[in-house]
Length: 451
Ligand code: GLC
Image 1 (cartoon, rainbow, N blue to C red):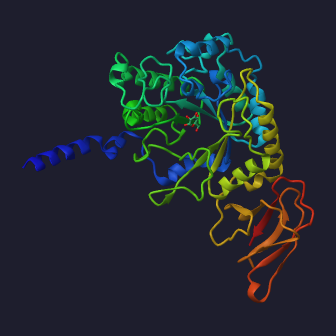
Image 2: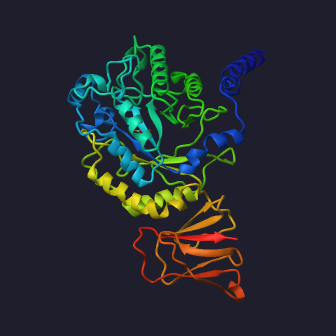
Image 3: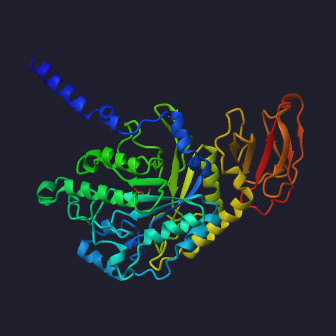
């Protein structure tokens, strides 16, 4: 008897919190409509992430306030010193465009809580620092002028807002079994949720068309925060109502809610295959840094080489995904010389090889990549791209290709690659003749026109 009563209660609770019931509020769309809405983004393949805030001044990780358990009072010195006199978003936009990037996502607010725009809802904003300018306003104008789509990163986490409760990832976190309840007395997450909605409304109302919103991030569980803490569904509903075409990441803790996210976000790691959700391939974007941290980190020496970065881009496309590559501008507001070097190298490669990236995706499975190569594929032009990660000596064989080819060339200079078809065991294999000398291209690409 008691058991039945309990299970009735449990069932009732389930009805209340079941995501399907709540998702009725989110706009509905068919799979085909979603693909269409996201088409510019999947075609673009390559974007720039920008992490910029007060943490550029300590220059030792954007989590410095947390890592070093700095109090808000002690962190104030960065606010008072913030005066990035070299901030010129036209230069940023130019270097993103020249690198071949088609969209940009800037941290409007990161976990430290500092706001890069003239928000009405806090004094903790760029316009109140010695710098005094609305960074976001100038930023959106500059990137739009270069033809890039503009997006915002908005941190759900906030280590400055007085109503944001101390949790396990907070600078003032305690030992595991600490009494968080009494620690957080007087803090009201309701007010914080209102604050987020107000800010998201500002960002998605006052700055024209915003193409992407990147909410970051949820960590449900003990002393953590998740969808209830953020009121994720209503936050998302608000974003979608203000910017109907907007593309949204998957960090609101709404993974199981229909319409709760648009793409998945493997961070700082290469995927081994096209990511799936419930057995279905999903839209994805890997976000990556040049050197390890997202904010400007002066003393970090673990910078990826241009070849590694180009491979990362090619490999993402070869598995049907995007790359969002991060720059952490300095406290002066400029891109660090190491970032500029790498962006230039990527631009040099993209100028001659971008055709193997834009509008491309994973190749159909009947194409078998030769060793040390990656394949990308443009389904509209029916061209196959072979990215040569290690330059072969003299020739390159590819199986299962006989009778399929119209023409082969190097992509960077449109010089013909001659090939022959094998015989006997290899009658289905083609053998492409390559010059012994590797062309002066970081990763050379063969372009195969298919019949
Ligand atoms: C993280 C980090 C962060 C960075 C982000 C980028 O979750 O907290 O500092 O902004 O990932 O993906």
